[in-house]
Length: 395
Image 1: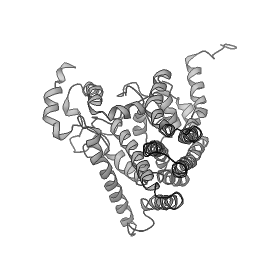
Image 2: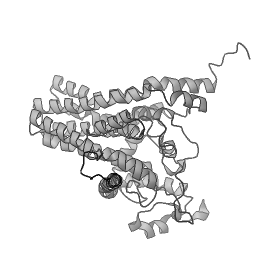
Image 3: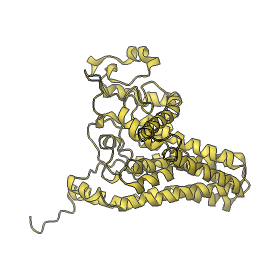
Image 4: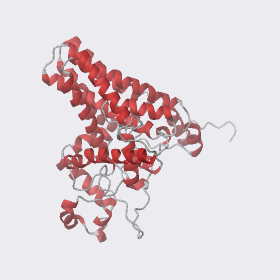
């Protein structure tokens, strides 16, 4: 009606919240500053335990914030998607984030090398830097999907070079998205498989698949896989150059610091891969091909705070259904498997297999309607899992 006030309608509030998120996404820029702020407090107070603060922030403060602020159920409609999807504002945020990740890594390296700390404090600093390296891979993941935008692809390589994981975009785009939620995918975890067992096939499997895919691409072009056209070698050279420079400037303490920071950054990605598709399976058709990847083949999380910090990576169902959609337009689905918390808490729980299995195995069984033929199973435990859970008539 003319003159009516729609400011209190659900549709208006949803649109207003989605529009306001354009400012809240700047939290992803602030995240890499947390280790630097905690380092400044450590220097000021002379208390090295402040160098552990980012670890506490990741595994305690963020899960608490997710619990307090709850779920984001707002979805952009088609009109708003058209308005948002090509807005370069959201890309510029990621460019700033890329710079901040390098500032954070180099800043922490300086602090570790120029002040007297116990080895325990240095470990806290390295793990904190590793958490931020892991978050950098989230940003690299988002930009790495925009294969038609050379500037985003270049920035993806730069930010992933922080942790020496420059092969990720190739493996992820051409390998994981093709084979996701199948036994053939080293980056899809299986029911009954602990994160530690998963990591032993995921980390080397991801690199082998990336190198094989890049070798095939270059051979089709008549080029050597050892040429500078190799998109794995390009970010690797940046990593090596930066690490050697920091070693020369900041001394031998950089060897354990950078190795731990890189390794723990890789671990964050392993945690993400582990929780995102645990136990979910795409079924094979009669022609031997797997069914098309659908939103139901990813675990979803709509917790507000961690989604803002992680650029809505946790809306993973829509991401796999529409891999090139930019983060600002990713949507929620009502009928997809849902995680009970955001990634920070799920990563923490995953490190305790008994707790993870207790929490997530019943959810996988319920999703599959107790039909273990519909579940991606650890082959070493197949008989045991069938005996324990297979009973499709009960659901």
